[in-house]
Length: 126
Image (cartoon, rainbow, N blue to C red; front, side, top):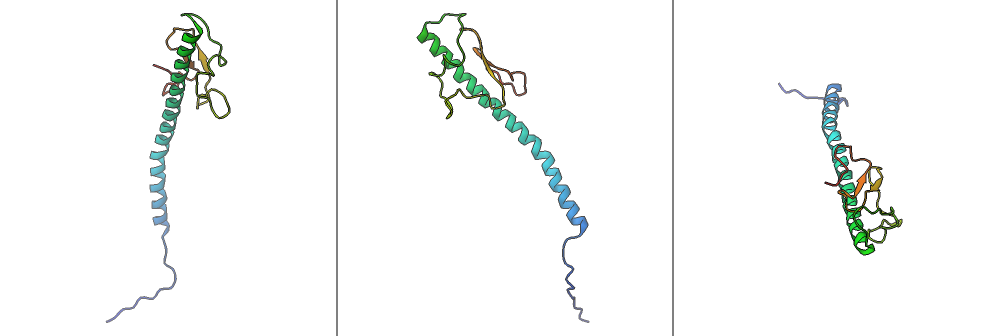
């Protein structure tokens, strides 16, 4: 006996199949989003540390050329703008996370700090 199927136009996904797909997508998002946020925080901390290295190098160069001695102060940012690659706006690169930079006395380690040095990952020169 030969059976034939008739297509009555009701082909598609069932509610259970759609719910399973949504659950899988939700699980993947639950895994991916925290890792993405951690990677962004690490990237911002790395950029901040690179800015601090550039500021530290500028402090050393300025100190040698200006005859500064250990314990002298440096005026931020006017003394260092000639020694740092500036942004397109003509300013010293800021902390990408919104922190502010401050300078210590000449000869101190580290010579520059970020206000976000207590975050994890740390915005601090080691």
